[in-house]
Length: 185
Image (cartoon, rainbow, N blue to C red; front, side, top):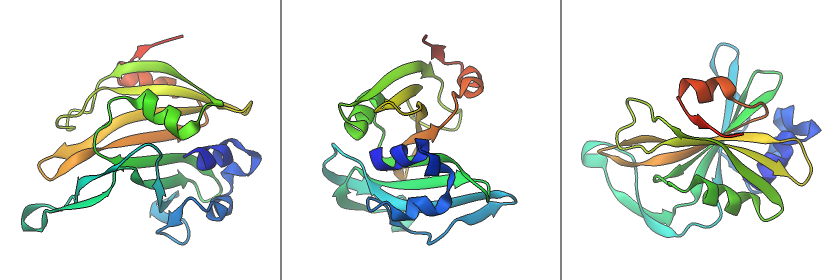
């Protein structure tokens, strides 16, 4: 997560091709794909730090449901934006993780400053079993701040849910208000 976040806040962070050089990401999509008119996304696999091997549900419903042993930190990374520029990064790891701050500190390391800017955010109405979300500001070695929205999604009968970290360059004040978060200074 650190390498992709450092690139994201750099001058090259808006360039789609800059991300292909990151060795920590195994790209599923060779290039950005348009998923709705004017909006693009590119997906890859990344390993988050600090997790162990567990029985992880395969996410398939009905008779195709099974579990497999793998590192809980094996996650999906998506870079998203317009055709011209990368605007956000989303990382989705299996299982709910309630201690977002601890997960983020393990990813960004001791030199980064990670602070909670909002918490106690209501989960989406359709998010069965999900806990509250939170927002964080991250300063990496004197660079511009990035903002991280942490949430729990897609829990239910055939999945243990996901913990999702959405990275943006601008403070997501409007989203924090919509989710009725308790905001910190």
